[in-house]
Image (cartoon, rainbow, N blue to C red; front, side, top):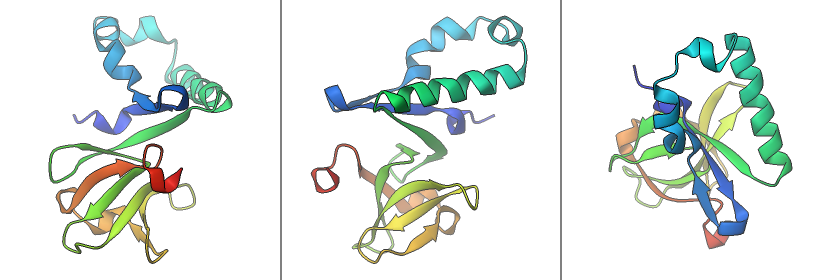
Length: 137
């Protein structure tokens, strides 16, 4: 099963960089059975939401992985700036759209929104992200 979809990264403005919590804790959590970590799936979800709210209140940005990789095998996260390869001058920002419960691509130049599903991930190239790109600061 592909678990990349359940990965998160956290942008920390003080260091102008990301941390990847699950990658850092993989060894610590790998040997523990689910029951020892949380009493129920509901508790797990509540803990995750509480942690995300805490991070947001500290000016941290939590971004979720789409679960897909671009043309160069880089995981695609929300907040990434991607170049749409079939259209050399087309660029967009990956964003989660709550109203339709899916990832979308906001075209940077035309202010058009595309369903992320319209492209194969291999037709995208991650070129930066909105938190570290000077244009968006």
